[in-house]
Amino acid sequence: MRTVTAVAHRGDPYRVRENTVDSLRSALRWGADAVEVDVRPTRDGVPVLLHDETLKRLWQQDRPLASLSLAEVRELTRGGVPTLAEALAATGGGRVMLDLPGTPDVRAARRVVDAVREAGAQERVYYCADARAMLAVRAADPSAEIALTWTSLAPPRPALLDAVRPRWLNYRFSLVDRELARRVHHDGYLLSVWTPDTRRALRRLLDLGVDSITTNRVDVLLAVRGD
Image (cartoon, rainbow, N blue to C red):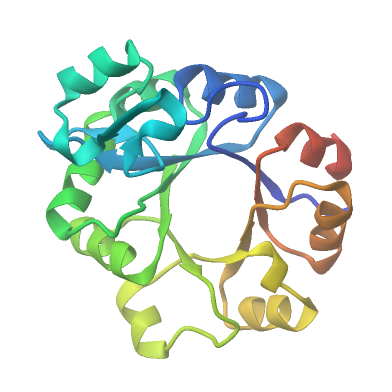
């Protein structure tokens, strides 16, 4: 069975609270090739790890992240929400996929790119999100490695691909069939998918020849992959 990149979605969320340092470390201990995290800015512009717009689901605090300073986030979560800098330090030399929900503008994207640069992590970090977010990243860093998230069976327009210059096309796993995989590879891109968690789905995607799988069950993917 061919090897694909095993990406741990938000760390190891079935065992440890997602998008935390402990969750990332747990995924890496299982043997993940990369970890995927969500990055949003605080009110004072510090990139931190959080998928949702508010702290309610994970931290039982119904407060929008955008209304809070980093100091307030630390107080409300008892230090549980790491900064991007802290997450990059915790992953050592491991690969990290940064998902940018909420369609950041160029200024916000630049702050993320700057944090990656300050951590000396440019060679091991890549970015994923929709076209608007990835255009902002491309404007902030002409050399960034990008996985363009695409949610339609219709292919991205050539003009968009020329502007974003992705290395990967990143699809919801249920959209991927043999013809789509063939087309993506024929067009010169790597194919990543998110987020299958069952053995059946993982085996199907491996058989289709995808290049990367982002999953909440990286241990299961590694077992199916034959590690």
